[in-house]
Length: 145
Image (tube, rainbow, N blue to C red; front, side):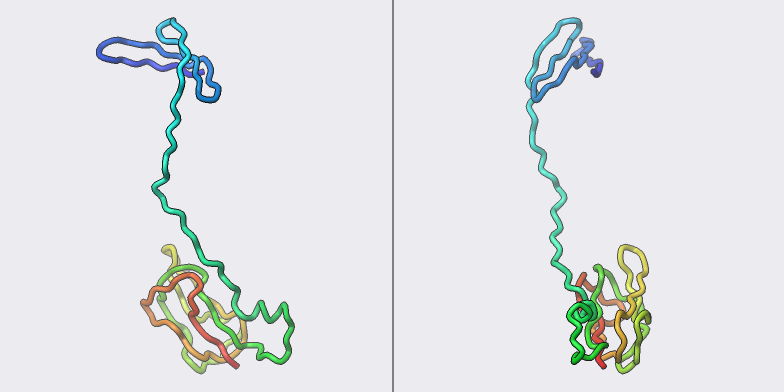
């Protein structure tokens, strides 16, 4: 299988792994065959597991599934798709927006991301300022009718 050369305290050893099954290896050291047991240590990962909260889609998609005609079509909120920093706000309270309008620019993962409106309506409130850090799922903008 694999051949190795070792030098231990001035002595040369030619080692060849002949077979490996489970934790028993058959090796040849300078022409002599040995069966050795391999101790497998369980390595703990140093990287912590990231547990993210479940993201609930913004109001528009839920209303589209339920088809409630009594609710205002533009009422809802725009949430941060991932953690980042607000770089630029392109709207102000009272502005009318439609689907696809850029509301703000957010830096996330060293990239600038345009956060666009997924509903039509009037900006009711802006929850963050330029330079603020946001987490995934934070409400950035509320849109009313």
